[in-house]
Image 1 (cartoon, rainbow, N blue to C red):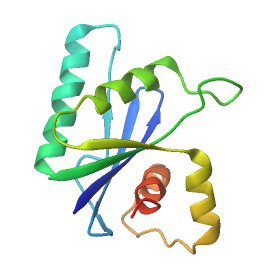
Image 2: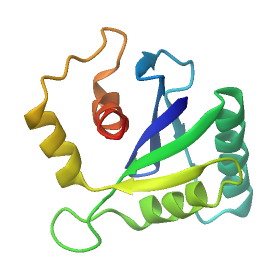
Image 3: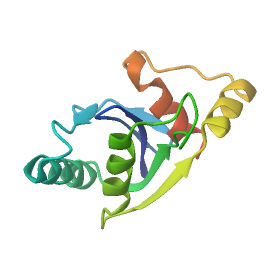
Length: 131
């Protein structure tokens, strides 16, 4: 089973794929939406994301949640990206709290794969804690 862990930051969707619990070093590690106010940029992002899901045979997506208010709240664009990801017709999408990811990391000795980029670590943990 292929699952995708996602962390949303600014206008970036940081991607990670686990196949049967093992890290897969995929070519596309993040997707960027250039201008969230332009319909063609939104369509381009949606098409790239749907293509990613199909090419990697993703069966489940897990997104690390962002706070809706407060000092560490997520930006408006990240919530728009989250909505677009949730609308995909290919697989289910679950939101994972930052507390769940943090608790999982504390309770388990996680070794990050050598090929993993530093910026993918939270996406990796998000996927890993849902196996």
